[in-house]
Amino acid sequence: MINLSTKIISKPIIFRKIKLSDAKIIQKQVNIMHILNKEKIIETLSFVKKDIKKAQNNWKKKKSFEYVIEYKNKISGTILLTFNNKYNYCELGYYIDPKYWGKGLIYKILNSVIEYIFTETNYEKIRFRCRSDNIKSCKSLNKFGAKKEAIIKGYFYENKKLIDAYYYQILKSNWKK
Ligand SMILES: CC(C)(COP(=O)(O)OP(=O)(O)OC[C@H]1O[C@@H](n2cnc3c(N)ncnc32)[C@H](O)[C@@H]1OP(=O)(O)O)[C@@H](O)C(=O)NCCC(=O)NCCS
Image (cartoon, rainbow, N blue to C red; front, side, top):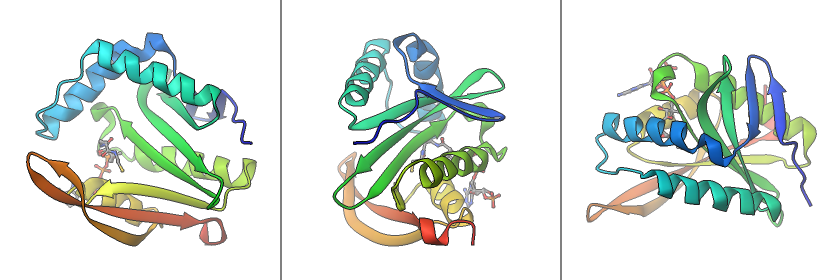
């Protein structure tokens, strides 16, 4: 069974286990993100706290591991690592503080996390699921060397509209080649 460290230091970034007191900052950042993405969603503090409690519970059960991303000593996003033992992969889900959008921080973060997974665990595949209309995310994954491996038609359902999901993947054998 996987047992991840509660703190991963990969200067200038630190990943540390999410805690309840992070809720207020996360709530502020994700709500700004929703506004910028023109999404009609508002996340309340109690919703974010409930999510963090769920994440802590999943960490206890070793089902998934959610970290806050600290950059220059400030919370700059979160990243969730979910492991699948049957198929030997780790799936990543994340957001970064809109303050850092367009500044290349996502490449530093992904580089550190992927390096950690491929060197400190036995998992050999890393997967990402993103909405087909999330151009920035798709483009950053492409640039990063992840390959689009699958399209799930109409995976998401939002405002009475079906949206496709793209699955991207990086294999350990192709990492940094
Ligand atoms: C996805 C996310 C991490 C990307 O980070 P970011 O700093 O905003 O990304 P960037 O601005 O560097 O954009 C990534 C790439 O898309 C390009 N891009 C941005 N907007 C674009 C547009 N409208 N059309 C075409 N390309 C675009 C950028 O030029 C960049 O390419 P480059 O590195 O070759 O210059 C961030 O936007 C985020 O946290 N979004 C909300 C949560 C989310 O979507 N998470 C991912 C779920 S899989």
